[in-house]
Amino acid sequence: MERELALEIVRVTELAALASATWMGRGDKIQADRAATSAMRAMFDTVSIQGTVVIGEGEMDEAPMLYIGEKVGSMQGPHVDVAVDPLEGTELLIKGLNNAMSVIAIANKGNLLHAPDMYMDKLSVGPSLVGKLHLNDPIEVTVRKAAKALNKSISTLTFMILERERHHASIQKLRDLGVRIKLLSDGDVAGAIAPSFAESGIDVFVGSGGAPEGVLAAAAVRCLGGDMQGRLLPNNESEWNRCKSMGISDPDRILSITELVGKDDVIFAATGITPGEFLEGVSYTSDQRASTHSVVMRAKTRTIRHIHTSHFLPLKFKNM
Image (cartoon, rainbow, N blue to C red; front, top):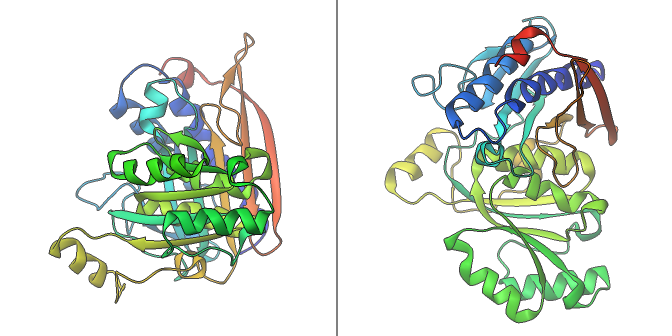
């Protein structure tokens, strides 16, 4: 993949963010998601790739746009796997909450895990904890190992976890141990990425969330030099068989970051829609302009670009 692709795909996330930002706080999930997805799909036509969506909005019969298996790009350039979430954190956006963003990852064909739409248990850390923690460890062991590796007291560690009923036991154990906790209402892509940004103040991300979101997060974490482990959580025979049909021979095993996003080059881009852990949201000025804040990263060079862009708003965005 050429480095120019990094700047091409960030234009795609920018347009999706601009299209969906007007739906902030308006309570309409369907319209917000449709705006982001339509804009992203249209802009993909300008990108010099022969892409196949491996993480998308669902199967073809469930998702008329950006479905798994859809071909995207100008059909000129490298053959790549594409993972997308045009609006990561739909609930966050329609409620006016933080951490909604538009996300894309691309890698050479055959590198991104074709993750089924089910839960995945996740452990994500920044560069200082690479190789120090293991997904199989009980939460109290993870806490002790993290404190020792970071040379911190347990009371100054900060863990991030989705606020879900299934996590109540883990949250209580963390509290009993004296760990600081930052709860997420939604948006576990941003949560899993956060430990790899030192400025986020997050040491470890734990807990289960969507498997497709796990692949997207792993792409960013790999670009940032962190580490992520995942384990699929099929809860019935149908989901187990779906894993098998997608080439995952042992759904119970722990997947390393290279099994999630490969060993070759990966490019990740995200544009903030509402303010978050490491991205500002879309903001509007009185002169028919909007500003966006994006990050685009490449695993091969470990380059991280923060891009602040001022956009002139065409009529279609002002009237959405």
